[in-house]
Image 1 (cartoon, one colour):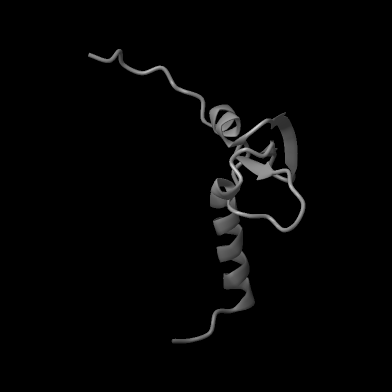
Image 2 (cartoon, rainbow, N blue to C red):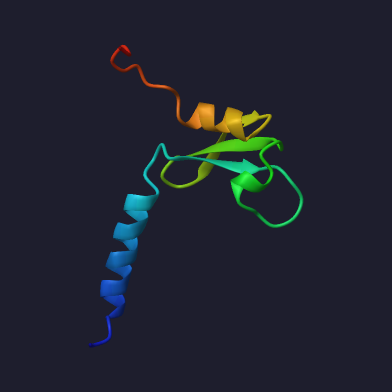
Length: 83
């Protein structure tokens, strides 16, 4: 298998980032000291909810815990009425 040229690597990287970080994507960051950790480890700590604008992460809101962050990032969509 041959080596990839720098041009191919650059194009592949741009496509990957375009798929991964689309404008409007949201994430919640735990507000705590130390390095970032998985969200489920400290569910009771406050979160900063951020939205990707296409060039930077912008603060949307600070919420009290993981559950509130998930509600803000993934609101319930109206669907068919349950039986």
